[in-house]
Length: 302
Image (cartoon, rainbow, N blue to C red):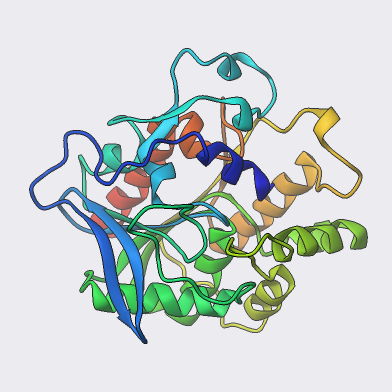
């Protein structure tokens, strides 16, 4: 499931700031120390601030784009995101949330394929602990107000899971969109877990590569998850059978792992109709609504 978004984003036109931007919207590199910089895109105003942690190989543009409304993939019962036409739009997830509160997205190293605003490269593969440290360094360097509502997609779910355990004081709310659940290897079989590890680790030079087994172990050794307003979002579309192998996790396994994550968070696993793994590209308004729901819970002291 890691490869799909990277393929899809190849069709996204680079977009520094979403359409209808505000004067205080920002998009550019932020120095985090050690001669390193990370790309940060912030839009809107208000609190709590929403901070998005993208999936593996993904970056901020995915939250400022969407599958075109009349694209045939929308009528397919399968997740065909690699065949979709994806374009920047003001009705994508980040600008939609920005109508209610301030929202920031960022790029990890090795994700944005080109352009002047690429985050400083680092050796790959890297650990989830490094990603947590980078997020915390970016929050400090950009002087972002905490506590904040975090949103995580795919591998970003492991980053957020560990971050919330190690730094519970910075998280006022948690949204997991099609996450890599910490319980995925619990429901997975040995050969599936091994294939997932290899898929995350073995990437071409310069591309983001991750270490799933290290991430699962780090989370298992960390303190408990904080009890704050939270939601888990799961897709109802899956790749067509012809694209799957016995090494892939099944849709049932992914849903079971997400149910277990929701239980650990004290919340529910919501199936979002009409979405594949990259939910923000299929139905940005539905993802934005769930984010705003958690923002409202935080605002009202839930």
